[in-house]
Image (tube, one colour):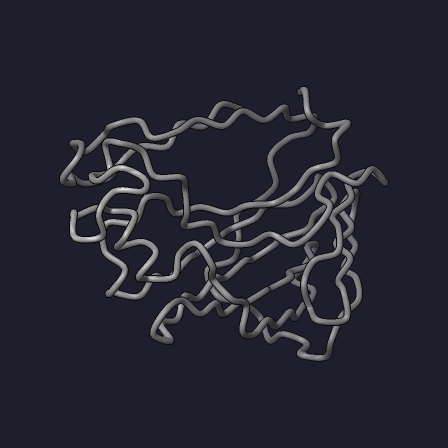
Length: 193
């Protein structure tokens, strides 16, 4: 599967439809069913793992993901976190090590605390929904000035694998972000697909 990420609306630097990235994944089984529109009641006790079919999610004591395995092979080696930062370029206005009074996107991003978001809270809960196991993870991250970002992850585990739906709710004060996405670490043996 090849995914292309594009702008849905016009912005200052590009028009709607502008390609901002691509991803490519190899699929070995048929796609799983779509996520439910409404979540069934969730079990709120702390969980250490969620397993169904070929997918296993292991959690650390603090609620963060320790690893994700598919068919007993680890494919993610840590937590999945929001990513709003990228290295600034000359096109972002101002140059690195330039005068502080020169306008630059980098200064705005740093003022928002995007380069150093702090995890404040994480909760993970789960339930069974028909033939699927549903895992819901909510992360709260804090930027500068106590601005709060909320990150929801909804994992639907089935006999065929996992479908992951991500939602990142960004504070209104964080305008013109350089990137909105998720970040995770894969084992080095997965470097080449």
